[in-house]
Each structure stands twice: as structure tokens, then as C-alpha cells.
Amino acid sequence: MNSESILKAVKLDLKKYTMNPATRKREVRLSELKEYFSNPEAADRILSSGRDPVVYEYYEYSVEEAVGHMTLGLTIIYPGKVGKEYFMTRGHFHQKPAAEFYLGIRGRGILLIQSEDGRTDYVELRPGIIGYVPPGWGHRTINTGRGKFIFFFAYPSDAGHDYGIVKEKGFAKIVVEEKGKPIIVDNPKYAGST
Ligand SMILES: [Fe+2]
Image (tube, rainbow, N blue to C red; front, side, top):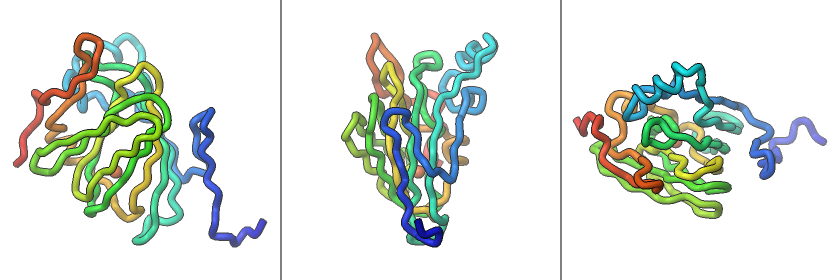
């Protein structure tokens, strides 16, 4: 194999749900996400029992975080809830108006998107379903199933991440379990569009 080669085979292991090589691998636990849930007291109850479960983990492969490149990745969201609200990613906007797509691989979930002025939309992801995030829209994914929710994603490598808007305002909608089924409802803690 030519070590100077610019072509790399990136392997998605569809049994173990790993990506290799990866330039980034991260686990995000409940203690880090507590304030993002609509009911942080419910998170505290889990944490005070001595558990700090991994809510989601992801792999990324990026050749270079520069204009024209794409970053590829795999996210695994574990099943679980904080109060009635399903386990989810933190959610973010891109610093540049860059699109992104998600391809469902296993399990079921929701891709929730939101404009900066609070308009929302969503798509239900299943294996084989692709969700598209238009440029400028914030995005979060939620595991509404009983098993792991796993999807592949790709976005422009120079997009950048802005987590501050979500941290300050939250998402306008949240996904909760009601009578055993996921429903999307207004977030009582959403801090509005200004
Ligand atoms: Fe993104």
C-alpha cells in the first residue's frame, strides 16, 4: 500500500457499529447534557443514584477541516429517557450556512431541525431513510426506540459548530413519550426567537 495515498477506505462496521479510521471519537454522558433536557431534576435523580449513562457517542473522520472537504461520521444514541424526554444529542447550529445529511442505519429516531427564529420541522429516521438538514438550520437527533438509534452523517468540514444558541435558548420542540409513544410538543423552557 502506498503510504502517500490520499484515498482511504473508511470502514463502517455494521455489526459492531464503529467507524475506522476515525479522527475523533467521543462519548457524551448524562452529566454533560443535564441542562439540555426539559426536566433537569429528573436527570439529577438518575445521577444521584450513582449512574451517569452514556447518552450518545460518535465517530468522525475528517481529512482536513478546510473548505471543500467533507466530514463523515457515525452516531449511536442509546435508548433511555430523562423524565418523559427521550435521550438525544446536544444539538447545534453550524457557524457557516452548511447543510448536513443523516442516513438511518439501525433503530428509530427523529431528526429535529430549527431555524434561528424558531421555526421547526422534523423527519422520522429509520434504516434506509435519509434526513436532510438545510443550511442555516440547527439540528438535534432523538432516539424514540427501545434499542440503539444509529445513523451515518456527512457535512462540509469547514462548517464549524455553534453550541451556544441551543445552550442559551434550547429547542422550540421536545420529543417526549406519551402513552408509550413519541410525540413532539412545545418546549416549555424554550427561550424564544430573540
Ligand atoms: Fe451538524
